[in-house]
Image 1 (cartoon, rainbow, N blue to C red):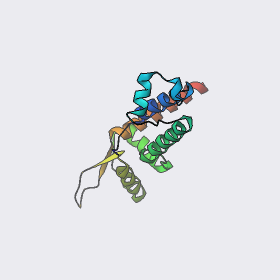
Image 2: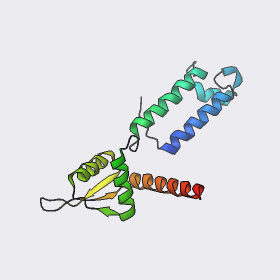
Image 3: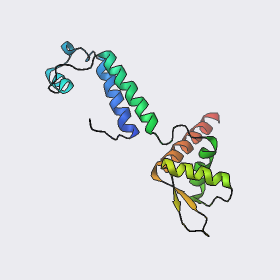
Image 4: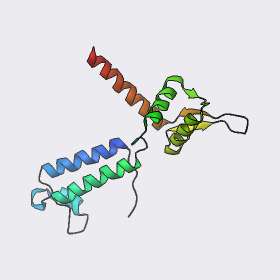
Length: 148
């Protein structure tokens, strides 16, 4: 079995297509066109029924959640990401923030710049970290607009 790498929008599209397929009774081979049936069985004689599609959707959701670098972020990690988004780069001086930053480096949300025994690390957002900040900043702006 080969491993696919999908981003969140691709997973969402696959899930939507599977649910559409399921809602239109395509789990039953009698309800599908020949072309769709050929895709569903790909030479085998068995395809997923409605419960098999449910299991596949659950698997995709769980697999994405495990691989999602922003799932389960702590409050300090979220705060650090917001600060980076606001300032572009940060040079934390408190050990707590260095630990938070290193945890975000491990998740691929932040990258470390600079090295050496006398240089404190400077951190900046990666593309994934930037996307998280943008999504959360826009969410906050939307909430503010709703309150006014």
